[in-house]
Length: 59
Image (cartoon, rainbow, N blue to C red):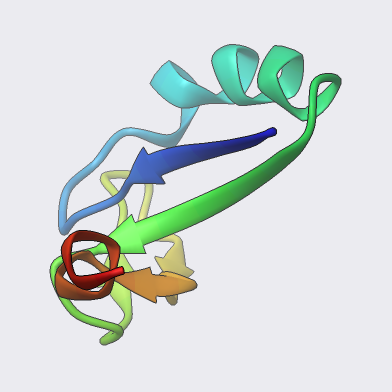
C-alpha cells in the first residue's frame, strides 16, 4: 500500500511526522508537490517531492 503526503512551501513537518510514522508501518510513503521543485517547510527544511501532483491525476 502507498500513502501520499502533500508537501508545500510552509508545511509544518512535526504535524505530519507521527502520522507518516504509522503509515510507514503499512507501506511506502510518497511525497507529492505541486511540482517537483524543492519546497521549504516552516522549520526551514528543504525537501524535494518525489512526484508532481499532475502525475498523480494523469496516471
